[in-house]
Length: 353
Image (cartoon, rainbow, N blue to C red; front, side, top):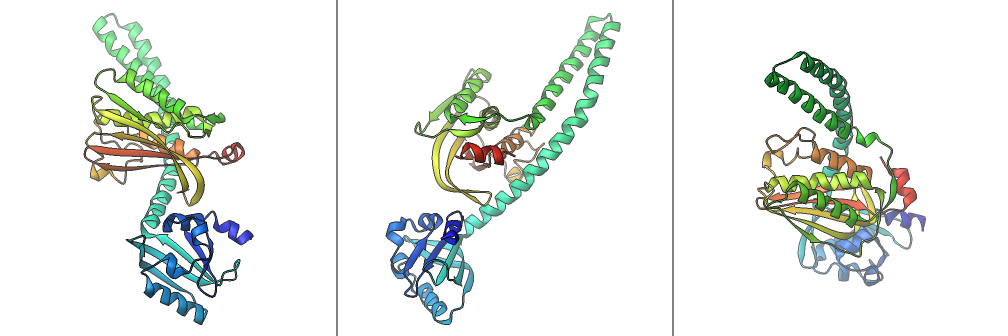
């Protein structure tokens, strides 16, 4: 039974079949793939579970008789009337009441896992780069600011003093930016978080920043459970994404803030029973194709004058909550979705990165 318990957490769809090719076990991912609940699957013949796939059922019968497994890197099955491309591994087994173990991964899911692995590596590189960059810039800023103030005292011409005041103000702005870059190193305050308190705070900030022309539509699922996490970093993550959306519309379009519950979600190769999805949608021009694979890297921006730090920081903040930011973009409709697993307090504290 412990082996079967481990299968429950896999992102791959797993079925166990007996010597008559009847299903004796199906994990949650298999329920999702086959669009049937466990009660419907258990005891059913594989030919009934996957009707119209006679060739595949024949291969299973051969595998059963020869006690040999097989792999297929591009198996096409008819699932609920749709052709689905799968990576399939069939293995003889003695787990539970089964004699054959079937493991399926959608090829699209394989690509998603590879993308997530790149993002995780990117997050770690981003954190190190941002920390080092912040420290390198922060150290001379105090000297620049102090020298500008001393110079201002020596100047009698008001016009020249204006230039030194610009230097001081810009040094202060950079100092503030560096402090923001270093905020991931502060001690988190792990507590229950109502995601709608986060989104309403973000909405209020955006309406203050863009008082004319920006429309914010709310589409909330008010039945969502609380998250356990660091509220301030979640606010900053959602704000960075939403501010990007508002800027993409030049502050005069419409953005939507949408919340939903997602079930049986896989993030970074870990399966979570529940996750909250916060989607920010805008009607701007979309992400330029040349930035599609670089959008979460620091110093990458599609906007003139942008720092290229907002999305990088947002991905890092969400990653510390074991989550992930995904996006899809076409001209006129861009959607960024923050996936945040719902976890117990103990797990959230232990896993906060």
